[in-house]
Image (cartoon, rainbow, N blue to C red):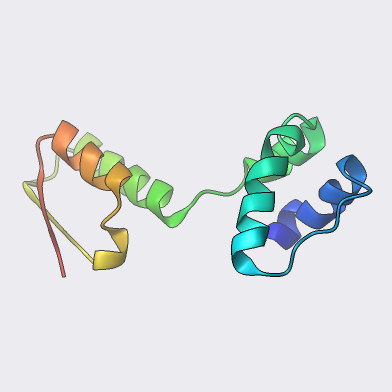
Length: 100
């Protein structure tokens, strides 16, 4: 995803003096620090909006299933999708869920 958004390119554009960390925790923290500035750049924002997380896609699929009024009363999904956002949406839509 970062290649398609040209994340490193935009980091160097907006933060030319900062070194991008290579360790995962440091890089994640750095990513959170620079994200607000990068998202103010219209070109980066356009690239960024093309992508959605797996959880976002799962929520969109659930929305689509509900919109089609299918006989949906129980959700069954892989434990990887046991994320607060998806569970909250299922509760809001009054669906029960089970993870395996």
